[in-house]
Structures are given as structure tokens and as C-alpha cells.
Length: 271
Ligand code: 2HA
Ligand code: ZN
Image (cartoon, rainbow, N blue to C red; front, side, top):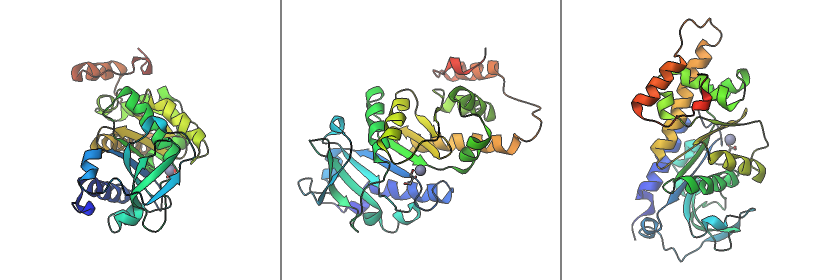
């Protein structure tokens, strides 16, 4: 058996959480990541018949039964993951009854998965239904995106359109736009269900006045989506109090989308 601490997916979780922390997206215990793993690959590092603990889920995840995820722990700080992955992360398998998870590694101090696991697993179910290669669900509190939530209408079309105007590459990176939820109580099945509904349509979902979710086939895709939104939101926040002299027009946005061959939300433009 290989050493789990050398597993690429553990190292990737360490590097990503450290990176997000240093970007200021994950203060204190803010943010969470879940990463769908390949069973065969995990089997090289862990005895998959050895379950450390069974933990109740509090919702039905039958559609994911048998699937294995590495997930950040509840109350844990992203800044600490790289120094103590076995306490701050857990590897869990969705039990056959869909009501529990089987802990295979981690949460060493008796801890458990993030409080946002409903939103994560329900989002995995949604994304897998539209993209069977999706693996990552990432949540964080990026500063400018959050700031923008207080001064910009929380409307999907308007929010997306404003961000598309802020950097030339935005419409190419997230042509599918951004789903927006109003402020809702976090850590609940209700916000999980609402997020998952949006995830059928979007790879990015803003939680009003809380943060953002990004998904992808890889850590780079999920991270890159959020990073691009955050950059655009920063430009917006740096310019929104000043007269706008120049902008990227809707016809230029179309030109970009057509040149790069992306399937963009035409209804998010005013043509
Ligand atoms: O886990 O970000 O949404 C901390 C959070 C809750
Ligand atoms: Zn949060």
C-alpha cells in the first residue's frame, strides 16, 4: 500500500486550500471542497474494506452510493490543511443506503465533513447528470465577489452581464453565466437543493451575500472559474464609483464568443 500523504489528490487538496487561503477567499473556517475520486486509485493507498466510522448524512445521496470523495472538514481552517491533512480532510464513501457515509481516512480528531456537504453532494449529482466527468465542487468567500453582492443587483442576467463586461476573457471562461441565489441560511438541505437546481444550468453559483460555488472536471477548472469571476468583480469594485467612459459592448461580446466557439447565454445579452 502506498503512503496516502503522497497521493496526488491529497497533495492537490493541500495545495489548493493553501492557495485559496492566501488569496483571502477562505478566512477562518470559510470554504469547503469536495473531490470525487477514482476508486481504483484510492485503493492503491487505502484498504477500502476498512471503515473507520459511519457518519449519518441527513439527506438522501443514493444516487452517489459507492462513490468516494475527499472532503474538507467542518470547522477546519484551509490554512491548516497542508500541515495536518489527516485532521482537516476526510476520505469518505457514500454508503449503499444513501443515508450515511463511511469514513475511510481522516477527520483524525473525531471531526466530520463540512456542514455544506448537502450542497456539495447534491451539486455533484446535478453536475454528473449534465457532465459525467465532473469531479470538483468548490465553495469560498472571495472578497470582491462578495463586495459586489452588496452594490449590484442579485440578478443572474445582470450579474453575469456586468462581469462579462469587466474582462475580455470572461465570456469565454464562463459563457454559461452565473447562477445567483438570494441570501439563504447556509449549511441546510434547503440551500443544498437550491444550489443543485442551479447547477443543472451553471458551473458557477453565487450565494447572495455569502460566497460562491464553482465546479469542474478538475481543480484547475473549478478554481479558474472562481478566479476569473473574482478578478472581474475586483475590476467592477475598482471602477463602479467612477464614470464609465469605456466598455466592452454586447456586439464585441458576441464577436468574442463566436471567435472562441463557446456556447454562451444569448439571453444574458441585450442585442
Ligand atoms: O464551512 O463556508 O458556508 C464554512 C462555510 C460555510
Ligand atoms: Zn461559506
